[in-house]
Picture 1 (spheres, one colour):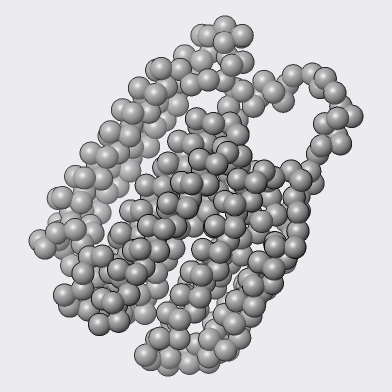
Picture 2 (cartoon, one colour):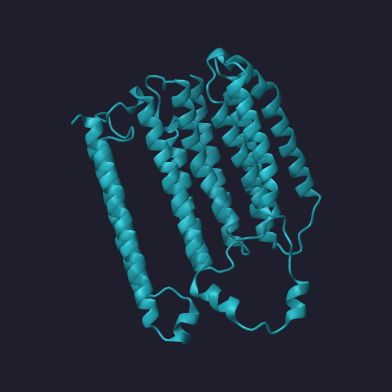
Length: 353
């Protein structure tokens, strides 16, 4: 068995261990909750045993990740790491697995918070003032409307795969799709500036503006990255570029048009996924890292920063039922974007060299 096969087997074993432990923790928490009195269960507050089990599971996951990084050399942390860049399929596989893991964690956390005992008790409680609640209800657009845009994106991908050569695909993206997307993004920002939401607090509006401006700025950088491709005839990333644009519009729409408190967590998830998408983009395009490139000019500082604040946002959601309606989350978002901008400034000289 070669090194890559052994590492692949280790990764599969690690995923199985973490999955089994997560399942056992979920069973234990449900069993303990059933033993509580009805009044205590209605509180919906996490008990001490849930934190202990969660910390144990987090420790196991951390040990597994450190083990894989130190033994398998999955990432470019050390000089003795295996050169995964020599095999594009290995890079794409590991990045896709990381994206799936992040999305799975996000779905699990949202499901856990939405179906918490407190929310179920509130839904089952009698409605004391129906007229007042109906008057304060805020209707937001349904996500089903995005299916029309999704169908258009699929049609464009089919057109590119069936008819357009690679240089035409690159020209289409550079001359039409990206400029049109940038124009729509600016229109969305202007529309946001001219609209008032009575259901959103001032802190929520500030957070939305911070994220929306950052998303549009990163869209500018994506366009410049595509224009800088030296060989348009070898362009092979139409799928990943369209996926990146689709994610941008979904996240922007969620931040701007919805009032759910999970929208800021999704925004941090976008910042986590963006460096991974860039890594896939470069691997598929066959763009190798320049020799002597500083670690600060790679994707890893951006990914680590996004993951840290993603976890902080999860903690804020769990600690405060009204997360996002106070000034502290807005300050946290501002600190994140300032650090993100500093990393971009540090990375620019090395990339230009």
